Picture (cartoon, rainbow, N blue to C red):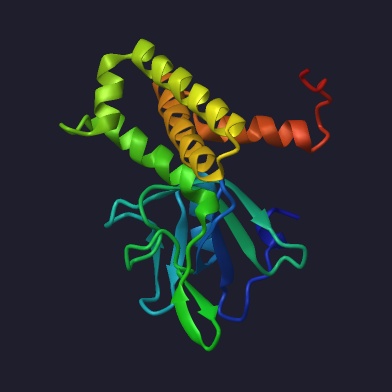
Length: 217
């Protein structure tokens, strides 16, 4: 049996597809795919879907530029739903929101949903764009143009500030200084061309039990 034969398409020849940010697990959108869309996605690594309203195949980002690079394709246990784990460029939603699931039920009304857990990935994307475009006046541009020594100096300074805030038992200061440190670490990783996803993978390996490492003293 081929991999395609394991997918249970409905009577219209469609299967629901959830797109999820591979690095963070954030759910981005829900769409549908037919056999052709799945085959093209698997062959090209670019997310393809089938439009029920237009009755045609479409590639995510072909007009907006907000492409989805597919890391892998997963099938649910019943075979009747598919997951695209992707690296999203720009917003996934046509409204300009990062995720199509941008509303949450708050009491008896829908309110704006936000999830701060994914903010580091969004910061990484902005920092990458700053590095590539070097807009005048941007702090990230200043750091990249000064080079690795300046970036390391800032990381060292912010690390010291975190230590001092913790020693002073000042929660507000500790929160603020930790945010500064994380930002500068993202800049450092970008300068060294090390994606955050590799750090997440390292942490996942350590805490999933796949690799036994001694705890640092």
